[in-house]
Length: 76
Image (cartoon, rainbow, N blue to C red; front, side, top):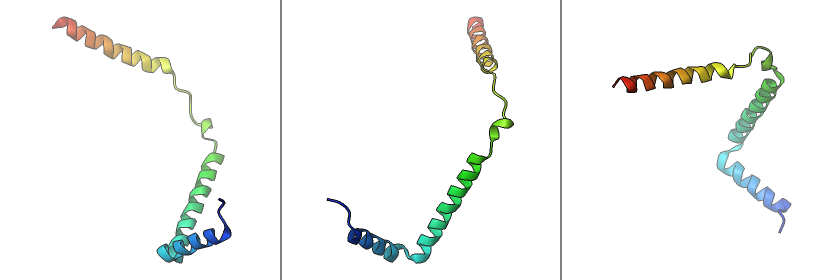
């Protein structure tokens, strides 16, 4: 069973009756703005300004914290 032209037409008519023509057109305008904004964001190369993060520095911080926690437990 495939979707026919009459079924699509009935769904479109019901949507227009429920939401109104103005609401649907403003919604489609918002969708178009979102798509344009997404395309603009994808076109902008942000990797030029971003430096890679050194993972070893963040691991050192967590190692220092775990060592200090161990030292406080030993003192008790």
